[in-house]
Image 1 (cartoon, rainbow, N blue to C red):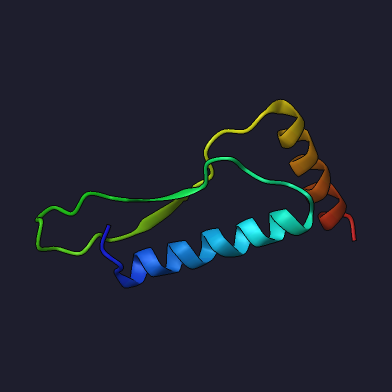
Image 2 (cartoon, rainbow, N blue to C red; image 1 turned 120 degrees about the vertical axis):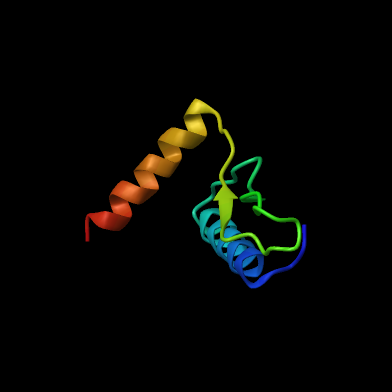
Length: 73
């Protein structure tokens, strides 16, 4: 995957989210970056997405708890 500005932005967002989750004791097992197909191979992808992947039920419950506590204040 080419390191376009959109991909670099998504990588930074993924890394920032992973660090914040790690501080909360949470690790998502499969975070990666996905790009939309460009209409023309010479065209830069219009956006990149942070794919959070899947996680176990206990990890999802822990994540929900951290979000609830963070929005309660």
